[in-house]
Image (cartoon, rainbow, N blue to C red; front, side):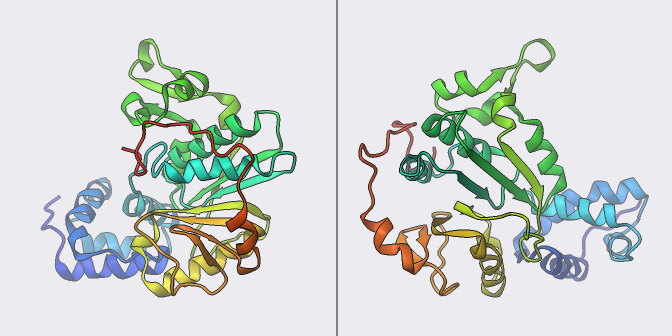
Length: 295
């Protein structure tokens, strides 16, 4: 294959395509990433240009390849207990609702670190026999498959407190040395689903006490943010909490939610109740040595 590289005109085509399919505004600085991640797909098909690959994925005859392209261009890095203050809040919030069903939606779950962190917090706070559930969704089938397997290199688990690593993860031996596996009893509590947040089929999702939508809106323009949040808010319980990343805000994005505190939002009708709520004993830190940003 005599690949001439990704031209500015071809890159502009992929920018428009990924915006249409996933709502993501791909900055011009991402051109090397697109080149690197799609080059092997050109080699796979024996294509001599990115323009030819663009025609292939937009022909309507290669739906699987189009999904793979979306997977390659939308996968973002995440890690366990990222932005740890959110999990202190989750622990406190779940404890205050002990005795009733408790559901959390991880709206951009990527390779699974966020939903498994949520599951560890709920297992510690409510117990493994309590009625709680984590729903984890992502636009990428590839990362969902990886997340469902629950298998990670050991260095990916550096954010997990040692006592939780010992309790909820199995360190690999022999051929799996250097990896760890999230234990089956925890993996079973996470329901992974393939959902595109800009055009979701969410009618059967039900209601959630907490919705996480963290570190994904930074890739959206304001119109897409409004669409995504508008699609998700109907699934938030009347007294639930919506959580975004520390570099994100819902100010100017929706009137359906009010600020509870930075990065935490709730319905206006529940704001007074949630602002004055504190659990009787306060949050028990699962990771007292970790900084707010999880590093």
